[in-house]
Each structure stands twice: as C-alpha cells, then as structure tokens.
Image 1: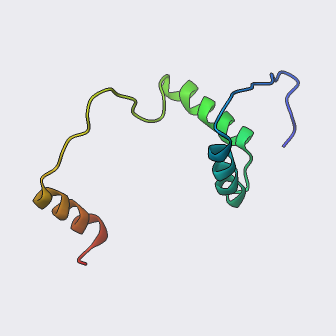
Image 2: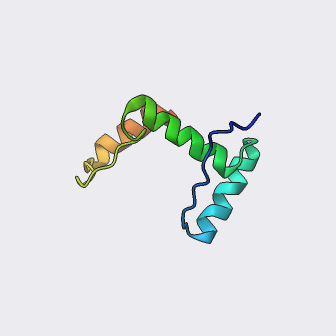
Image 3: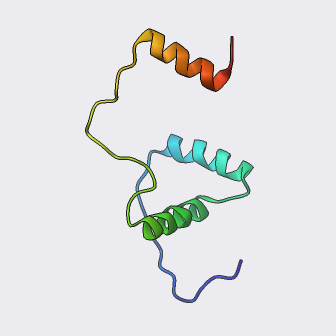
Length: 78
C-alpha cells in the first residue's frame, strides 16, 4: 500500500501486554497495529461515533432461564 504524503505520526501509551496480545492477533490477520488504528478512525469518521457502544449503564442482568435460552439459540443444544 502506498503511503500518502499527508500523514501524521500518532503516539499513544498502552499497556505493553495488551499491545503484544493485539499484535499477535493482528499478525494472524495480516495487519499491523497502525492498520487497525486507521480502520478504527475510518469507522469513527463514517459513523460520526465510535463503532461500539460506550456507556455507564450497568449491563442488563438475565435470569438463568433467559440466559440458557439465549445460549441454546446461539450454540444449539448442549
């Protein structure tokens, strides 16, 4: 991929172990952290929001029966 002349260097502090684990996953996808970060920025630009939910609301608690039903729908009988 050709580099654009209109690029900037972005630096961020992240936990070393998190970066190492992410780099391993990205390598299996044929990507580098910079590629993933650029994709994140593109999604933010397209959606005009983060591409995932960020909230302070507590997660909905499911009853054991409801959770079992949802798991069975997704995973099948076990």
